[in-house]
Length: 401
Figure 1 (cartoon, rainbow, N blue to C red):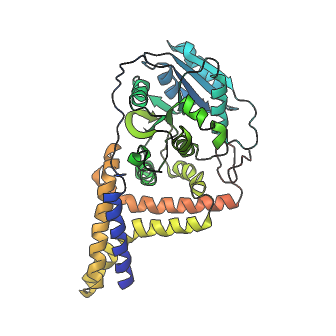
Figure 2 (tube, rainbow, N blue to C red):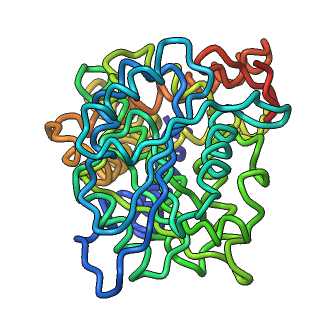
Figure 3 (cartoon, one colour):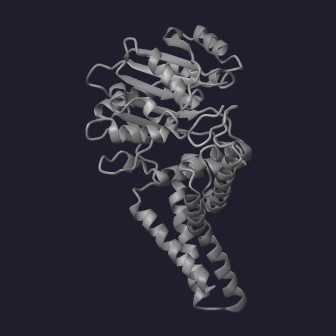
C-alpha cells in the first residue's frame, strides 16, 4: 500500500503539471475563424489522394467540388492504383455536380522505392498542378466532407495570420460504443502529444498537423525541400507539419492547428477492430521503432492513466476493510484527485463529441486499450507487418508493398 500511495502521489503531481502547464492541451481551441478577406481571394489547388475509396467518395467529393469560394479552385483527385472503380465513381460525381469542371483525375505513376503510398499520391498531385500552380494547396483525404465555407475559412486563417500551414482536426465518426470510447480519447492523446497552442507558437519546437485537412503555401513547401524531404514518412501529417515549421522559411515557417465542426470524416468507425487497425499502423512508428521508448510509453501510460483509479479502489478498499490510516488514506486521496483532474481535462473532448459526462471516467479503460494496441504495433513490426494499410505493408519507413 505504501508503494501504491507513492505511485499515486507521483501520478497526481504529473496530472497537476499537465493540467496547468502543458499548453492547455485539453481545451477545444483554437477554433477556425469565420471567413473574412479584405484582399482578393488567392487561387487554391485541392489535392485528394484516393486508394480504393469508391464507397466513401459520394459522401466527400461533392463537398469539395461545391465549395462556396470566391477565388479559383482546381481539384486534383489522385487515383492511387485503386481496384474498386474509384475513378469511375469520381467521374460520375463530377458529371452530377454543378462544379464538376473543377475536377481533374490523375492516375498515379508507379510508386518508387522510398515513398509511402499517400505521400507519393500527393506528390503526383503537386506535379499535376504545377502548370499555372496556385499559391495555396489543400491536402484533404478522400473521406473528408467539408461544409461550403470551410475553404474560405481556411484561406482566411492562412492569409490573415500569415501562416505557411493551416491544419484542422477533422471530426471523426463516433457512433458505436467502442468508437465513442476510443475516438475522443484518440484526439485527446494526439493533443497531449502535440498541444495545438504550442504548434501555433513559433517559439515552441512542437510541430504537428492533422492529415485529413492541411492548407499550405506552395512556396513554403518548395522552400522546405518539397514532399521528397519526407517521402518515407508513415506519419505524414506530423512529418509535414514539422518540415514546414522548421524549414518553411529562412527562420522557420508559421503553422496553425485547430478545431472546427465543419470538416468531418465520413469513414465509418463503429467497432474495436477498425480503431485497432488505425492505431497499430503507426503507433510503433511514432516511437521511432525504439523498444526503449516502447517500455517508457507503457510505464508512462500505466502511471498516468491506470494508477489513479487503482489507488482509489485499493486505498478505499483498505479503509473499508481495515479502517487503516496513513498509506491507505494517501492512496485513496491521490487516486481520487488524480482521476478527477483526468476526467476534468477529458470533459471538453467528450462534450465536443456530444457524449455524456459519465464517459470521462472511462478514459483509463481507453488508455489501457491504446497501450495494448501500441504493444501490438511493435510486435507486428517484428513480424514484418508494420504499417499495414489497404494491401500495403511498410517496414522501417521503407515501402514493402
